[in-house]
Image 1 (spheres, rainbow, N blue to C red):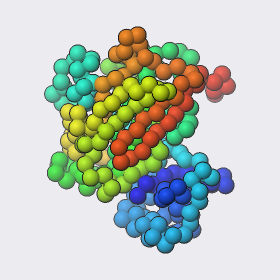
Image 2: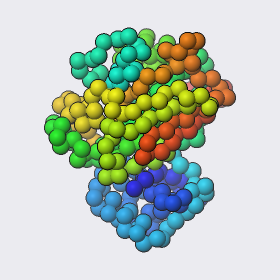
Image 3: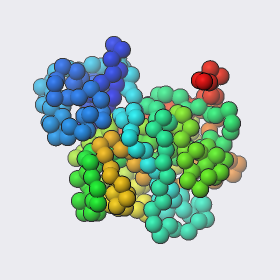
Image 4: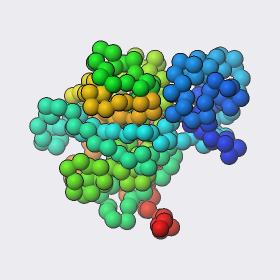
Length: 290
């Protein structure tokens, strides 16, 4: 299933995309209105959505709804650095011995079609096309061979990075967490539909220029190893988002630098999942709140 968070007639809820339509769970009491509640409900909600899809009822044309990030406000949004062999090669850094994670604040999350802001404080705005997975079960101390069971599904992510702010701090958090710098979508493809998340082509375009062209088999630490490692330290919960790293071809390593500029469009495509498209604009002047 392709699960979505969408708005129709000023009401936001959960649905599933099928053949250009959104199957709407609005009138089904077993289908919660938010993705966090939907994932927390587990098999009950998934079964109800499958039954609704099979019934052929509840369809709204896809072009009549607004899609949001599948998980608009994840409880945790974690990313891993230096996790693709081709990206490590372009940086000239050593292969890490252990996974290295950072936090993206959940307020950075936006959905497909929404604008990425080039911030007023920096012009070093970079893209990172990534596979992201979403946790579907509350879990701790998950062994690698059981980790597949706690993944709800997969989506496309752009780990937008403000490079100068990123390297001001060893944790990367500020440079990874500017508002609008966490595009996710266009939907969450349930794990049962992804035969092997570690063999998916990943491509990133800036306008019509192909910048990243790789495959998830380039990962150093795979999705299951990430879950096993993280769950030794913390409880993972339904709706937590984990980005799995970016391949080679990032803007900061181009000569000259290939930073994103207002007027451009970032497009990331992952095999068997979909395409995430976001325009880039200057940060608007009317965002101050105090």
